[in-house]
Length: 132
Image (tube, rainbow, N blue to C red):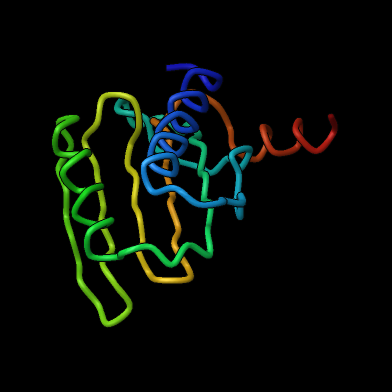
């Protein structure tokens, strides 16, 4: 996977999740944030991280269950962790992204996704982005 495809898949996954949850969302990190990862062959690679948040009150229990069901239907492995604030739902093993999560905390929802690892150097990518 190349950098542009990896980023596009990650953005689409976040957009899908936030559209299903509703509300107004603001990026907190990314989608142009690159970090190091390791490619399957052991070489250094890079991946994108995208974190967005909302002051959505929502129904945390129902929203968490809905996202878990949606990601399972996409073939992802899903882990749900409950807390006093609401559920945290983690999806991994998808075809297009490395992972995605939603923290369904009333007044402080977040959705975060990691792209698949692609060939590249995260530091160089960030330098190039800062030069643009």
